[in-house]
Structures are given as C-alpha cells and as structure tokens.
Length: 234
Figure 1 (tube, rainbow, N blue to C red):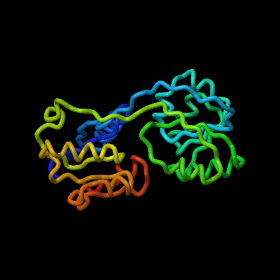
Figure 2 (cartoon, rainbow, N blue to C red; figure 1 turned 90 degrees about the horizontal axis):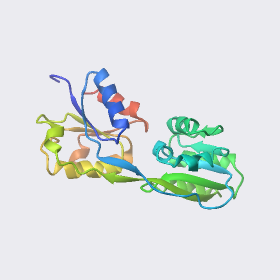
Figure 3 (cartoon, helix red, strand yellow; figure 1 turned 90 degrees about the vertical axis):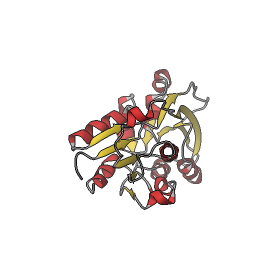
Figure 4 (tube, rainbow, N blue to C red; figure 1 turned 120 degrees about the vertical axis):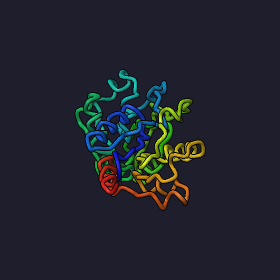
C-alpha cells in the first residue's frame, strides 16, 4: 500500500488519542473520529449491605462520584478484566479480582468466590449488554445496578474537515454502538467504499451491513492489541 494507511479510530476519548499515538508509532496515519462519548450520571448507591462490587467498564469508575467510590473501597471488587481491575485499584479498592475479559467470565468468577444470595453492587453504564446480569442472577447472586455513566452519539458538523479527502483504508470498531454510528456516517461520506473493518467481537461483526462483512475481520481476543494484530494485514 502506497503511503501510510489511514486508519479510522472510532473509540471514545481519552482512549482514542492513546490509540492514535500507538498507530503513529507503528507507521499508520490515524484519523481520530470518536463516534460516541461517555457522560457521567448523577447517582446514589441504593441502601443495603453489599458483599462486593462488580465493574465491567473502566468508564464506570472514571465517571463515578469520588465520594461514592470512597464509600465502597472497603468491599471486595471484581472487574471484568485486567485493565478494569487496574482502574479499580487506582480508585482505591485494595482487594480486586480480575475475571477473564467478558461479562460471563465475571459472573462465573463472582459465583465461585461468593456465597449464594450474596448482594453485589454493579457499577455500570446505562447502555450495556445483559450477559453479566443474566449469568449472575442464574448463579444465585443478588445484583443492584448503579449506573454511573451514559453513552451518547457525537454529531459532527465538520465531518469532511475531520476525515479529509482521502479514502479510509481501515476502521477500528469497538462496539455495536459505534458500528451503528459508522453505518450512518457512510450515508454522508464516500470515503468508506473500500474500507476494511476490524471488529472487536463477533457481535460487532454481525451488526454490520452484509456488503461490509466481506471486508470485515474479527479480532481473536476482545482487546485492542488483537485489533492491531489484524492491521498487520494492510
């Protein structure tokens, strides 16, 4: 491919800028266009005695009220993966367990570590998949959900200026939410007609139009490095 491949980064900030720096280091030309943003929600912890805290997203901790977190750090924390576990430790939790990287693994970890009927406070986003809650309930846990953030589309008025006038060679897609936004973007831009789409999960892949699936790949793991591994094919 002549010149540096242009790679569209669709994840929210602050992660988008971090990804762009990594792409530049690898010789790619990043095009930063977050298709969603996370916004904090005013929330309070429902009353009750909790045995543990569960977290499936770094954003749930990033957007939580510091006073809320301070009231919970004495509890055991269970995180969906290593990155979320690191964020929990940075937030002040001393006893943190990392699960295998998805909601089902987190539910299994909790069920094996806690007694049946244990009361778990789940710090979550308003937009989320039901997998963790379904599996946790099936495992005999009692969940109370505390939504600390929401996800919103970003409506760009300067889209052409942000994308430039050269085709996008590849797009990194981190969520179904972003995939839907990208589909809408394609209706007003002709820069995605030959784009290769790299999806973080099979669920994201399935949300793409049929004509895009022919140019789409699924990462082997649900982490960004796996997406970067796919880029090696460009």
